Image 1 (tube, helix red, strand yellow):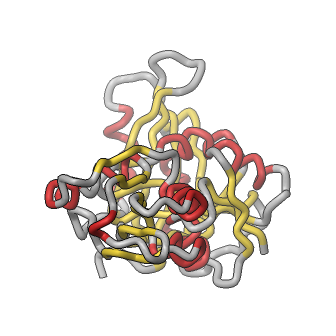
Image 2: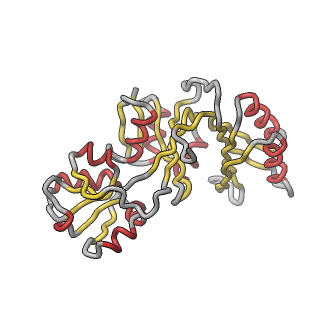
Length: 275
């Protein structure tokens, strides 16, 4: 089974793919659009995409593109994000002067840099890519910040583990497939959907009341502008569900009130952060 990810091998998406589908062949892609193109064209069997970080928020590149394709969410993983200081074998903390990583990763390690003012933080296009770069350049005064998977994949040495500022950093990853190719989940616990409302007063309140009336917990809602349609907005929502029957009923209620309703998937969550 081949699964596309955005970013280099050794990235957090790579780690998520191996957790969601053990033994999978991971196919790295440069951008979000390339991931979904690979899946849509059939070059890969599935894709693993990040959709939200508990500190940084939603990954909107994937949400916007996901609505335009006929894909379905098969499973979700909530993965703790642990940043590590990684260097080539033989490099010590004392010899490091520059630290490379993605700007978001650098921003999540501010306390570490405050405690090590001798380190110069340098932005790089990818966390795992920064590890590959330092291993190839063989510089003895440069390190990177990335996942344990990146160190393992490129042969780097972890100088210090868990250097992120906050322990509660989690990322939600979706395992997605082409519509019709994913096995139906017999006992889903979560429903993801997108809906476009009628432009009238109270439309959003009525839509949300369909979930409240059935005692379904709305765990997330977010609006996004419709591309090419100024001042129109698509709403994305996640709903906790006890099963397929309740999901069907909620979608039927919503379709009576909305111009468009698209089910993105009903699935189970692997390793929920609340447990």
